[in-house]
Figure (cartoon, rainbow, N blue to C red):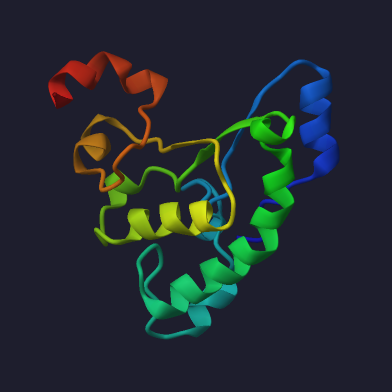
Length: 149
């Protein structure tokens, strides 16, 4: 949260090059980043439960999305711009700590005006645990889809 800045110029440059954009707004960015892309100030709350529906965390996510998503909405494909999909979190099935978290993030995006394809990404085992109905499959896991049926 705060690591990602949606820069209109970058998104429009992608459009000028004939590219589509899959936006990954987080709040969790990637395990290789410090604190996974989450701001360290979240840890000032000694009871903080990252990537859950813990009130302190959802309050921070709501503030972040309230700032970010209004900038994203006009950059969606339905608005004539290149964002064709938005990732709902990243690899949460591998984390799988709170069954209400992914639905919360999905609702948070939808209620702020995201209308494009919502997707998630995870490994084979994480997809089995996914709590997000209607989420997507990563290309690298397509060969495992039969096992999930």
